Image 1 (spheres, rainbow, N blue to C red):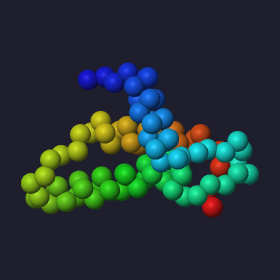
Image 2 (cartoon, rainbow, N blue to C red; image 1 turned 90 degrees about the vertical axis):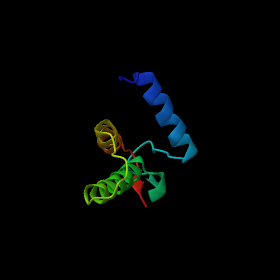
Image 3 (cartoon, helix red, strand yellow; image 1 turned 180 degrees about the vertical axis):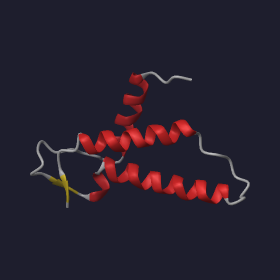
Image 4 (tube, rainbow, N blue to C red; image 1 turned 45 degrees about the vertical axis):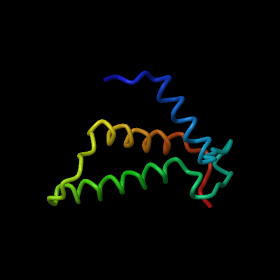
Length: 88
């Protein structure tokens, strides 16, 4: 199942607006840690890693689809490359 790019961009903008995520005009700007897309993608990656470790340990819980991990990794790389403000 291929998700169109415009759908992913729409979802990304909605999430960013909900969390009040902002990027500055230049790296001289600062923002709170919770406004960073990079921080949130890393937090989610860590939680998914913990979930997968518990699942592989014999817990009978549903598996995380591989495409979700791939998309989250891509978001982490993209958000780091496009960052324009330092975290306070």
